[in-house]
Image 1 (tube, helix red, strand yellow):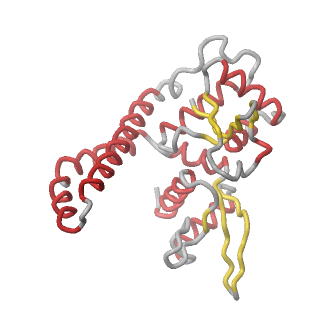
Image 2 (cartoon, rainbow, N blue to C red):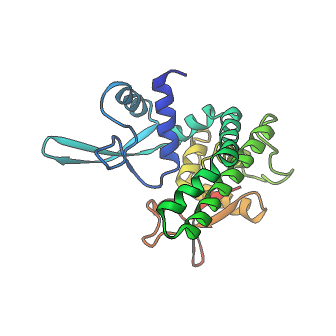
Image 3 (tube, helix red, strand yellow):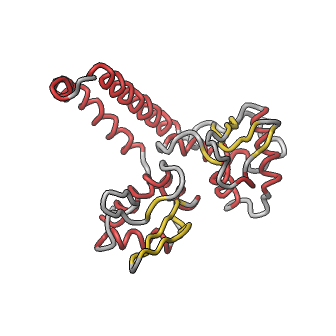
Length: 248
């Protein structure tokens, strides 16, 4: 992989794990998807926009400076999934284990000298490392299972009259195995399925999700923000619950 493609892939990984929109370019201390407007970063950003891996949501103009805000598209998520490999997950797992074996004692001593609340910080950091380790172990296990059709499909009869059921379950499994998290927003999942099922409507999408949820193939999870989901037309209403995420 050349440098442009490596920068593009890493930026899209960041975009898939960051909720909401991001600046296209970093500005001072303000984070952005790409480091600068020059050289290989600008080339990678141009490819991302050109290939519809990201979409520009809005722009802000201050004087002569135009700031673009973007978010990843379903096509961009697919780009990451197709290029993330079991080898990467195993390399990260090996690096994390090496950190635990060689770097932990010195790290603790450094915190003891510089931070008064070492106890609380130590607990938080150990929990973070454990979560990362659990995630990487899960990715390795899923990557090995995906050697045979990306893991088992839903049980016989699970799909029923839902032609896209296997595609939905397989996408959720591949998303977790690639480290993008288990909570997939309904707009992202709909966009992925719509690329294969051109006639799929939001109404049929909701009906199918309810069936898969009732049969235990997927889990529906509520939106957890105070202001409601950003694209309410994709939200699935069930009594007082407002479902916004799907998970395997």
